[in-house]
Image (cartoon, rainbow, N blue to C red; front, side, top):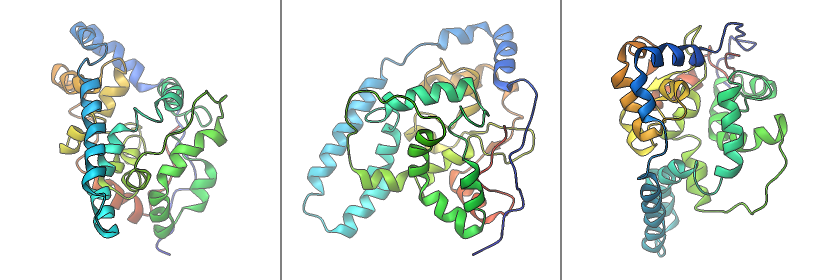
Length: 261
């Protein structure tokens, strides 16, 4: 079943949340960053283009074999669905939890990005972590309903190219950001950025330190934050590959579904 993980508990810290502190320092030195706050007016056109592309692909693939459909879903369709996951259909419920992830980062109950103790205990071998990565979309979707349930809102959950979405949120390079963002790879650091090419298809979610420092800045402008204040981000630990993150998480016995709190 592979090596058993060496860590047995979360990493507990009692200092001030780092992003709020760094935000104050950066804004004092670079107040012009406030000009980046707001929404991206081009975002709606990008999202519309992605959705229309998916409808076009459904028409193109209508008579293709299952192997071809699954391959295209993994390599193309699932990637687009992954990028759209903050839009339709999960934005309404996800928004409430994501805002609290920023407000209560590291809180074992209110930050639903943190795996549960049950997950950490069950998936603690190389094979177990491999299964956990494959099932990550289910844990990511249903964990909040168990650890911190909220009253449901009206509306129905839409199913849209479900299989591609499931694959691209599990054992897939773009899904590496789920683990790379906050799982502790270096003691004392709870957030990590990635500045590689996959940012161009994930709305710059890799600029994660910048995102947590300035959540009011849209993804398209996050590289500008790093450009304005490079001395605050250049020396922070960062990831160079989301694929490498998935491999290290599964194969390294020091890694498991535990986070810094």
